[in-house]
Image (cartoon, rainbow, N blue to C red; front, side, top):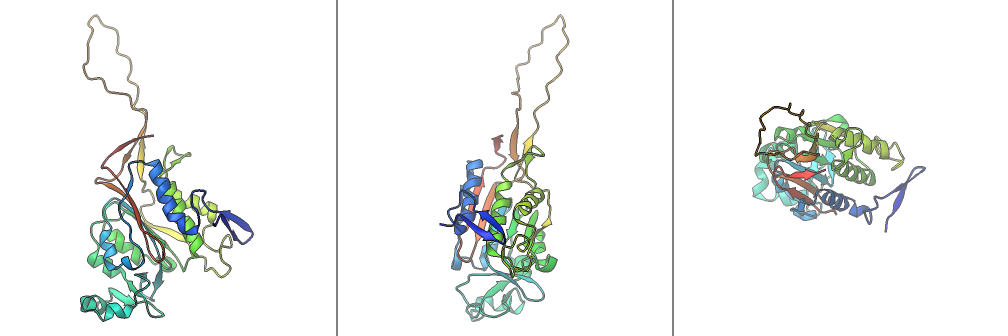
Length: 301
């Protein structure tokens, strides 16, 4: 059982609710669900289940955490598909001939794997309005390139987190866990749920701005997660207490109001217009998890 790992001179502990490194993302889901009890799991994909059409499963008002492999082909950041399937499997299938010819599906540099380009998302991605997507794969934002993130934004996503280089896996996993769970916490500085930008900044303050800063891996390239899109996106909004009305002046006539509104102590509401969904998509040797809550549900703070 992993309880901690060494990064340079520091001893970093795993989250107490994760049994080992492979349990970090499921632990994030469990924590989020415990904080928002109406969230329920809805999607689970693994390894060879993560095909091209996984992109089509992203919908409005979701959080999508994509764990897995990625690459850069000198033009675009790529999302690598099922890691047990060779590119030749796609290239020999007539169903993919047009997409391969148009470079929507390509062979990853170094051979063997297949990857999808931003063009694939442009063609097949559906409405992602209001969603936040964390692309934890390597090179998803190669040296600041935002073409892959922009493809999701073009479909309506509110924000995307991507990585500047090949990223050390433990650092990438703990950053995904920390950012995700912080989004379901109240920021003590503001008294409201964490903004995405604040959640990422806090995670970096704990684990390093990049995967080199705290010595996660001596040969690390300094991969840094960064936000493309709305850094002010948040899961929920805490409403301020309703103001106390001024007392009515005394008069000779007593007026009775049959409608008495309860006082608002404080509540959080969904920011999305549709059903809010918490969706975690993971590939390689991981799992895909998701949580869904009812539309505009009021959650007492």
